[in-house]
Length: 126
Image (cartoon, rainbow, N blue to C red; front, side, top):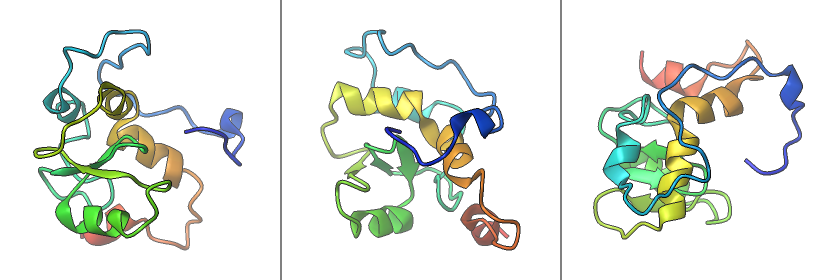
């Protein structure tokens, strides 16, 4: 995720998740559908809705239409949103979504949320 203000050594271990590909693995034969099959990518990273159709390709996460709309309202330097069905994807976007994925991204971005705040996923799914 680039440079971080967080001390990565103080973070808990990432969630156990499927087979992560090495950065050197060829991506020419990989598809968006391969990335969607990764554990956790079958639901929206933000709200947990099933069958996400959008992705923030720079963050490496999949989103539902509602959350994709919110991400689209941000600058593309924050969240660059593409359709999982209609846009043509670059190999590096597919690789990012396979390397990061929804579970790992949520672990990273939410690991230090103070207890007094409900996490978005827990709030929207109840």
